[in-house]
Length: 342
Image 1 (cartoon, rainbow, N blue to C red):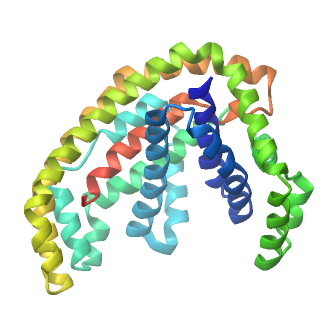
Image 2 (cartoon, helix red, strand yellow):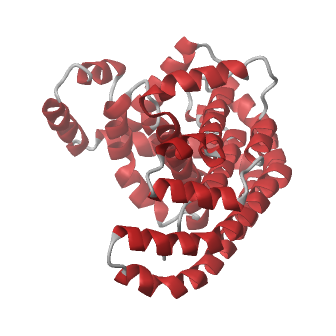
């Protein structure tokens, strides 16, 4: 139950805070409500599982923001809609989303993309295969989220999101809607008083423990899913170790660079050595998630569907392991475009 508990809390924060329907209000409510709960639970949880999940969620957020902003700026919403509509007639599965993410640019193209970024070559950056790839994986992450709610209409999705937010913040739907009419200062004051009462913390902990109780029978299968995920993570960790050794050759030069231009030139040389390593590790990790972790995730999802049929407004709506697998896969993919410093 301990492993499930920390996963439930982490997912609630990540999913609710990313839901555009509620914006900053729910982000504050969900995150603040669970801060103390996470502090209490983390000492008794499996920290490796927590870190792996956090990385997947955070990297997916980065992919969406970086990929879309770099490629399309203010027009990104229209472009996203076109991309989704073009794929609407195709059969989309979690496996097919990972397969698309595996179609990755070359290491040389990643290095070129970073050069365009450093030199502010906007046109080349816009037409770069890496920009297109990052934009595509952002869309894949969105499609994975859509698949998780494919059996619900828009009203049910909104209701579920309100219920999740209420469960983890202790705020009623009326209170959430009332907050949306307040100024930033009024919101802060209201939430400060709300969290001081301890209601939010109690609601978050109760919901997490209740969810963990229903999920406990699935723990052996979840352990297998975690193990497969750890195997994938280890490819990234091994690559990071290699990159760390390479970084040691450049760190002094980077620190003593006299200008941003000089620093970028050194960083680019460093990245030209690490990009092939990062790319190879990402592909191995993603293949592991596709061939080993996703089939286990789909087994879990069959059981989760039974839980949801009984607890329709339950936190189990968040626990879609195939979606989580794709999210982690997106994290593997997007880390290739980063220059890692140590």
